[in-house]
Image 1 (cartoon, helix red, strand yellow):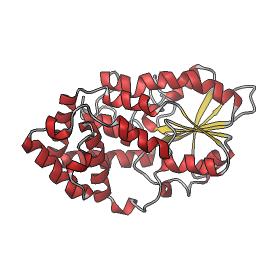
Image 2 (cartoon, helix red, strand yellow):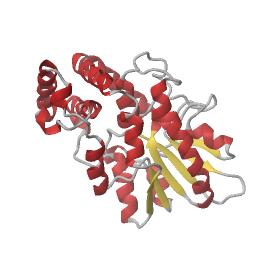
Image 3 (cartoon, helix red, strand yellow):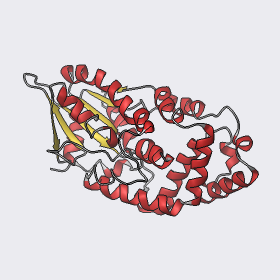
Length: 293
């Protein structure tokens, strides 16, 4: 199981899992229940894209603006930044877990894509460095998508707060960090970090394929790709399915009493263990709708 899936499928993209047989694509889903006047919406985000990708889509923005509560995977605010720095810290500094050759290779790559030395990140876990590199490589490859705007997940929450809406996280940042960093040993994290540097051209090609599929709402396109893995992998249990199960304990009560807008990584939506099917099993009608008209 590669860290490519861990980072791209969860922290960065989380975009590829099957949806139901009847509906195989869609990022925006309307959630209703017979006998209830409440209408909620479930949206699959892609954490690399900025607000400019979503703020011109009328149906999506209507769903956000009509909600009385907005939920994300976690609450993204200034306190989260400080906590994230603490949670990405490793037990041992990078210069003690990487060989001198490995350290030099990672340092060179970070300087190239981020303009910062590895010493700046020396307390980070190797998988956190992986994530930093992925985002840096994406920005270098797609400068046309970088307009210095907020990432879409942050944009949703900040827009909601300005409108006086309640903003809530489905889990704590600690829960999310445990799901990611607890899934791979430090030794495996180092292996995956060095593998990224060695095969970055291939990783960027996969990232481009993911971006194309996301924009088309084709959530199932890359499911059978060996590099991305398949449902049932041990890592996917911790990163997607266990979290989905926890969220499905909370969401029905929220949807029963609110007009809610829920924005989570799109990979959490699909498949028999995804949020769409999970809500349907709990009596909700979940239908994909267009974001633009």
